Image (tube, rainbow, N blue to C red; front, side):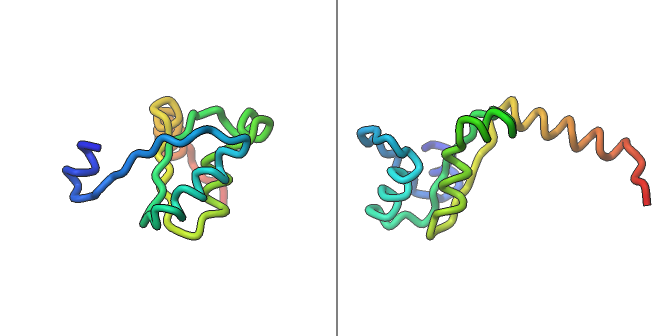
Length: 94
């Protein structure tokens, strides 16, 4: 919350009893609060594990009626950074 406050935002973390459908619960709570944005993170499971297990952030992103900010896990951010560096070094074929 300190980072949000430093950026001039008002963050309201919420704890709600877990339901079977976590994404639906997050969307319902955002609607109850009339939240301007939903902020959530990823676990960095990767595309195959995420496909097999489902992705809360993916579901929220595609079903939200408001802005959604998904913050990648540190390991996923590092992987993406590595991929970006590798892409810059790899010549493109045209």
